[in-house]
Amino acid sequence: MIYSRWRADGGYDYFRSTKRYGLGDDLPTPRLQAVHAIGVPSTSIGRDMPADARWAGRGPLARGAIVPMDRSGMSGLGVLGTTAGNLALLTAAALFGWWLRGQLKREWA
Image (cartoon, rainbow, N blue to C red; front, side):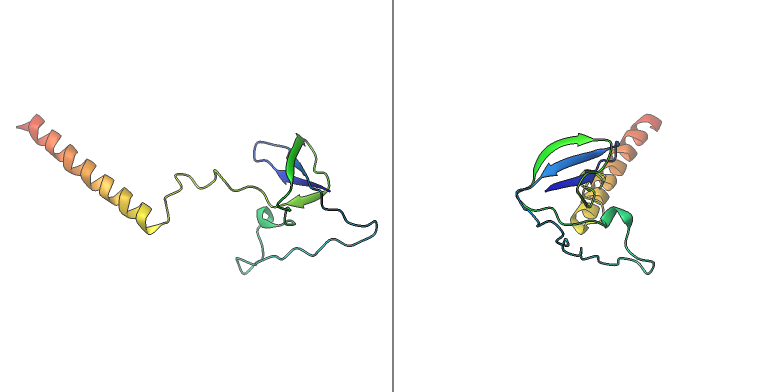
């Protein structure tokens, strides 16, 4: 079976799996978790891709079953929003401020 995943830069990546369904068989219903009162984001909707699926190419249109988009690389620095990440950024900002204060004192003295 072929699975398609949308790419942010346009088009779809295709993945091929050895999983087969009989002609006329219904695919399993995707489980959707509502994250907001108005429903599920369109970027989270799709069927689960089997673990054995391998990349099989890309193209402009979706083929087969649609899987949710890949969110890797969309989190910015990857540390924002975590306690350790916020503490590290706060520490770095404080150290930079302390260093900058020392530099300005030297210039004005």
